[in-house]
Length: 532
Image (cartoon, rainbow, N blue to C red; front, side, top):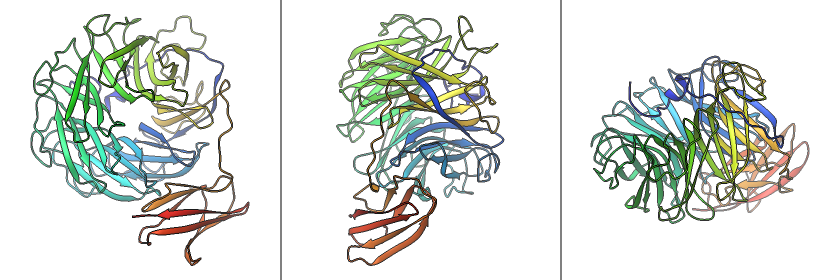
């Protein structure tokens, strides 16, 4: 049993997360959907897609049951669910080896595909083409727009290496962040400082390692968030209880602190900050703000002490800090919902308000809507650019509902995605197994807007080098797609069923192509530029 403050699967095995309730009549449920088989599915990430839909990523223990279409290979497998804007299935995919494969992160790529990052202890077999180097490794998979695998790579040393996030970089490559207890071994060439270190790997567009960096002290440093920044560098953050040692140059304040590092494009450290109070403070999410600087969000058990200037309500509260571009504190605030509050998501909308997602534990005192033994629900919080609360809302079942991602949708509503262990009850009308991916779409009566649409077809990305997604902006029963070159020669022809139409231009010459979509409703065309 490890001593990590928040372990991956442990978030779901230990019943510590119960919830508060708040009420706002403006944010009401538009629809909710459950996805999974008869056993357990754990959602870890979700992203909006260019076709107005969404993609969900996590891991599954279920076989071909419920609405899961593929058999499980063994233990936990990666599981991806691509949905349209109404939550209905576009496609789903499973990837796994003979061990445990835990998917942590998914990101849209500029070619219309997706990059997956998770942790695996599987040897070669099943969908895994390389052996594990140690106890657990980074396992990265690149998918095209159809969800088919393009390449995969295993990265690790002789110990335990746990992925947290992956993002595409400006040069078309990828930045991968996680934690490592491996020394120099396998394909890990950076040194080991303590029990667990931040380990950051830069990949080229084909998954080949360009550079890697380890940051840490002599104790435990657990990376939770990494993001590319506007200056082509990276902002990195997590939990640390290391004193000054290794390449950590600030003392800790309490049992554990936020530890934030700014790197340049080559992975070299520009600055670092340790932020915390007398007790335990655990950073979960970093965000580069539209107005400049960074937002750091997580959970705090500390009273006012150290660099913590806002007191808690009781127990563990959300703690959000706004930093300048050089890491100085601009403002900070705490948000109390119950005994144990767990922040998991931060995004910023066009109006520059922040959307905060998480879940919390609360007592049933003075609540208009409650269960006899407590509430485990999703929680959504909107705050202003200066940290003032605008509204909060909870949705959930009578079981355990753990939110992982919250973001605003194009129609001014909100998508909440996570894992639910509850049967159909309260806000939940569906359920497939012990634990499901559970997605809730909220509409905002105070911010309803007509979604902006093109009258014709859209293509994303355009220009492209390989794949593009052609988006049909109307519903249809039947249709086909034709791809022509600039001279009018027919290159491809196939039938279509979904409003997202992946077009494969690999192997074709650089130039302009015309995609014509004919449905029982209309015939429309769009020009696609293929480049090197």
